[in-house]
Image 1: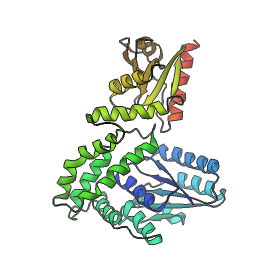
Image 2: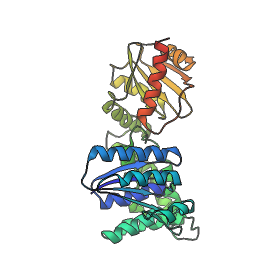
Image 3: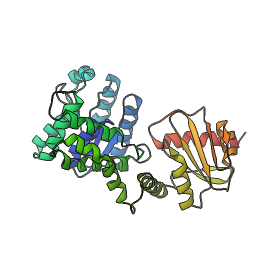
Image 4: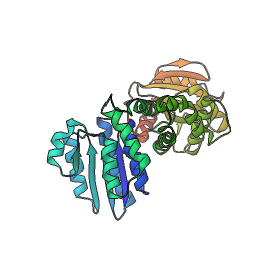
Length: 341
């Protein structure tokens, strides 16, 4: 059976996926915050199910409550798919109306979604002591059991996930999941230590370096992250490439440390002429390598400016999206309008 698992973007959401990672081998992970992003991810899942054409599939949604409109839409779509089942495991009381209407919508307000997910699948397959303790720690912090023995440790895990933004989840969803799973799995060894919360908190920097050092020789964390991200961009450079008046560039979305990563990418990929990053606030940052004056690009596309190799601006027509393909199309449309005035 192929599992398509959509979950939230916090500790509880990724925790649910850490559970299913243990019990299923064939999984596609998707993550979403609330609002329209859920709808976009559901549509993406449905499209992928049709492409994959598996004999059996399960759509699992965890730690997200659907609106009635979203639930109705998904229910109707799944009815038209052969050998596809649907299950939602959640604990948010705002999902009560949907839970009362749909038998695939399971709601329990007394347990966090990770604990619900672990209890469900460990009963279906087999228990796992490490995941059981992880689910109890997540439960303590997610439903705010401040007197629970695991509460303080849960706070550190909460921070671990919220601070794990080094691998952009829009451009690199699979790698983002792998990074967070790696950090969470490496946290297991601290659970039974004396002063576990302090020990884990002290180790967070070390755990990050351990992950990124696996792809390069030792360096500062910033340099290790840059090398890792540049390697990912290099692998995807063809599908992420854009053109402006005959110059070749790469488009990224909401990365941090644009100057370092942009320069490192252009050095590693001399056949590219510029590096562009856009964020949710419509701001663009451009870096060049001397082949094209990026201040001109910034002025013409984003009503901005700056220096020949470092500039910025704003694409006012840009509307934030949760899918890279939609982001790229909007930027290409903005470039097309400038080139065809």
